[in-house]
Length: 208
Image 1 (spheres, rainbow, N blue to C red):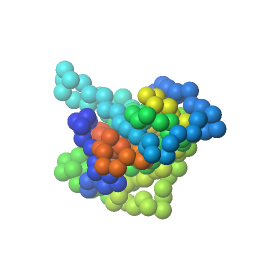
Image 2: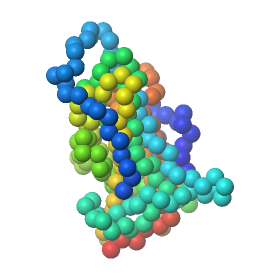
Image 3: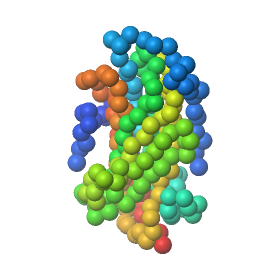
């Protein structure tokens, strides 16, 4: 179930085949120089998982694949479909970048799972450079990633980063939640729109 839209993390801290749209990004050389006193201001949103409000239960629509490049679906869950970055400032942002973390948690007690980092993700947006931060990832902390949206994001413009979830077989786990947290880097200090989190649900998974 998704977190409230105003659920935000403090800066750099953490508690505890969909269509994608790409804006027309211009090259950095085509962006006019601006005064250094004007700071970039970016906002990020992890979009809500699908939810059936009539029956008050999650909609298990998003596939979790077997392997990073596989086409076989291991299970479908109610998961955040994408991350959206918006330039809410007055100056163009060059190569917007940030980080993402996925943490698997046991459904029954919401405790840390032995497989916290086993649910992973990539993106189908070819304008986004996405790399796993394996050096800082641990079984307890979850799977961590760095991303860079190549090009320039003008004021008022957004870019979507669709998430493609997967597990590496063999993997078996009872019902669980997945916390997806994301950050975007800008030059504004003290605001709360540069981070976002949502919680998804997966009934179970058995991948061999």
